[in-house]
Length: 189
Image 1 (tube, rainbow, N blue to C red):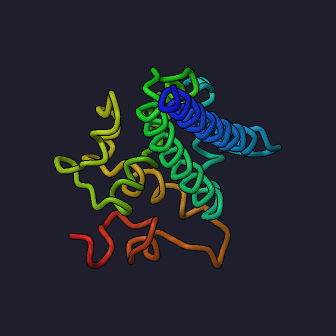
Image 2 (image 1 turned 30 degrees about the vertical axis):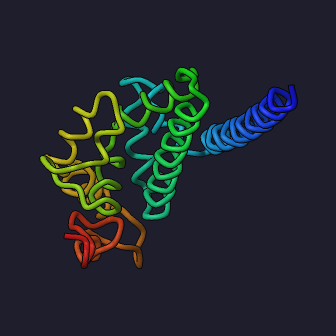
């Protein structure tokens, strides 16, 4: 009888911890959604809900300045972190994927502007045919294509950097290293 009660209390404590973890994850997801709803935010374009009719405007807005590109990369990095944490939570809770995880994964897998591929290149040392980070996704085909084509730097940053205000990063600066570069940081080969 005592062991049954002990198991009951231990199990209910673990469930409370999982519930608290879930609430924290949902709060992080809500914070990301709030960032997209801010006035003049180009981050909403990264969720893939805007559609092809507004894609050109989204691209122009997202790549208008180095700061807007950095904000986009930061947002996508937060999405990737949240997806990893949501997936881990679902595994620990032995639950299926919630709608929030499905929508988050879909947004990431869409990688409309190559930001996910850029982060995988710089952060994880990914190459087109060698990227462990892709294994966490269901449909990594678009990200794989973006890795192979270098969509982010080769096309988008290079095309828009010329219009950035004077004194900002230009294409030559972007090729030297860092998050805008198309190369793997030193020591990550």
